[in-house]
Amino acid sequence: MARLIAEVLEGEFDVVLVRKLGAPGNPEFAIGAIDETGWATLGPYAAMAGADSGYIGRAKARELETIRKRRAQYSPLHPPIDPAGRIVIVVDDGLATGSTMLAALHALRQRAPRKLICAVPVAPPDTLEKVGQHADEVVCLHAPEYFQAVGQFYADFGQVEDEEVIALLSERKKP
Amino acid sequence: MKLHILIVAALLSGYGVSETATVAATAGAAKAKEAEQAKNDAPAQVQGKLDEAMKQAEQKRDVDAR
Image (tube, rainbow over the protein chains, first blue to last red):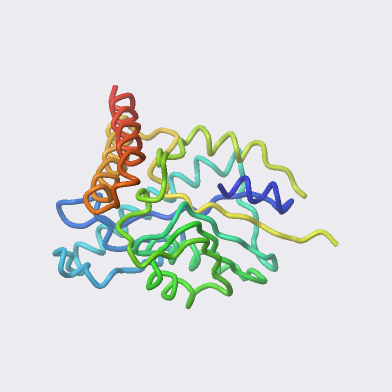
C-alpha cells in the first residue's frame, strides 16, 4: 500500500520497524508496541493482562533486540532514508488499538521530519483521536463506530511477505 | 516543484529474512484469529468475504508451517 502511494506521489519508499509487545502467555495479544529507539507505548489493558514492570522490561529488551537484528539485516542492502526535514507519510493497512502506529510515529518524530502524516484506510474513531495527538495530520478513509478488527474490512488480509518487502525496497528510486 | 515526500510503511518486523517457519505460522494464525473475531459480529453481507479471508489465512499458515 505504501509503495503504491509513493509511486503516485512520486515520493521515496521506506519501512519503519516496530514490534508488538505481547501479553504474558499470549504473545499474539498486543499490550503495547516498541520502536527502534527503544521507546514503548503501553495500552491501559497491559496490567489487566498480567504484565508487571518486570515482564514489560524483559519484553521490551527482547523485542528491541529483534528490531536491531532485523535492521542489521536490511541496512547493508537497503540503508534507511533520513526523514529529517521531509514530509513523511506513515502508512499501515489499518489501525485497531493504534499501538504500532504510535511507536512508528514516535520513531520518526525523533528524526525531525518537516511534517508527519499518518495515512490509513480504516480505523476506529477513538484510535484516530489518540494517534492524531502524535501526528501533524491524520488521513483515514473510513472510521466506523462498529469496529472489531482491521481484517473485518479486507477481502484479502494476507500478510506482506518479507521477500516482497525486500523486493520493493530494492526497486525504490529517488524521485 | 516536486514534493519532497517520504512514504514509510509501518512494518511489524516479525517476518524477518531468517524468521522461522514457526513464527510465520504464528503470524498466519493471528490473521486467522483476527478474521474469526471479526466474523463473529460482522453483518451478514460480509460473511462470504470473511470466509474467504479466513480460508486464505489458514492455507497460508499451512504452507508456512511446512
